[in-house]
Amino acid sequence: MLGGLQESLLVLLSFNPKEAQIIRNIVDINLFGGLYRTLATRCYEHLDRFKQPPGDHLPDIMGDKLESDNKREVSLYTDLLEN
View 1 (tube, rainbow, N blue to C red):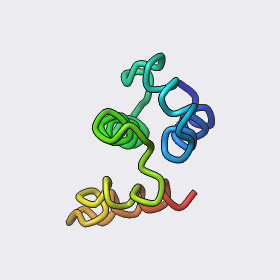
View 2 (cartoon, helix red, strand yellow):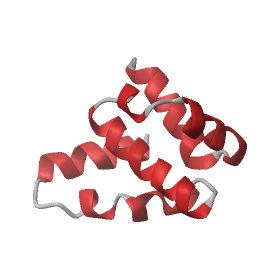
View 3 (cartoon, helix red, strand yellow):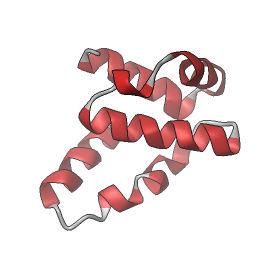
């Protein structure tokens, strides 16, 4: 899946309750790649557990990735979440 499309879907998965559930039900996680797949997986898990997108809790569900010893990975995830 193209980067821009993945980012658009992740915004909806992260913040839009109605569209997040629709995306969760029709978009296979394997269509996301790399960092996007990790974030999408965490959003899917949050949606399954709490029946709502993570919203302001997005940094919380990505906490282990943001606190990693791998500074490059931390930088990539930080950029992804900030954008």
